[in-house]
Length: 303
Image (cartoon, rainbow, N blue to C red; front, side, top):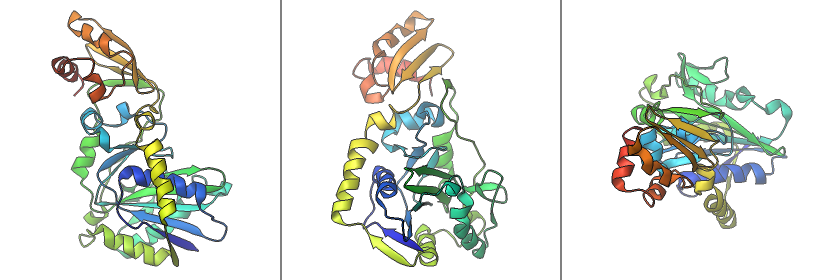
């Protein structure tokens, strides 16, 4: 038995990140599992233990920092936009469900097959079609419940996704877990009638769920509080990144907990970098300590 979680309106990506954590910690899954289906605004979503400075293209995380979300689960980085359907199954924790993505995603795969999408699972349990990844997945558990959530590329802007996740010109030394890069595809490329994400959402809700539950005002307030106190903060989004060293041909910048801990350079023209030690590596914060021309000089070697 699966109950659909109804969200009364569209919220920010940070709300949905908070909602998923709230659900796994608060749902009573004794008699039913739950399913959340939603469409997000443009954002990049990194795994709990990933290094933003490595996973995302510099131009994205530096200039579009408001679109960087860190989720509660591990796994790799994914891109959300209006052409992507996000799903999350919340279920009572049982050991056999851990990393058992087939158990959760098989009903979705079967429905896609009915829509003439050759969806199947590969050796890594990713959902693929003709060898191209159409869904990325991750899990989190508090040992009471487990959430198995993922993306479904329906009609996503793959060029925008590629730009956000494009490899950088600089090197990053870190012990953080790296994403496994895969060739991706929209399901609309296999059936050009499948371009409306809301239609897919409604079909899956009708096929998989026998009842629904609407979040009440108090619950939404609790989720919004978690959003503001955790998911929107720089401490969670950037400070959570494992220690790393960004290396260019002319200088290197070490970052710990989102703050510049050390700089190294050979040319005296980069002595200004010493002024950013102890400063969050964040555009607005950097400009409080170095001039716009100095910032531009640094950026020339990072773009």
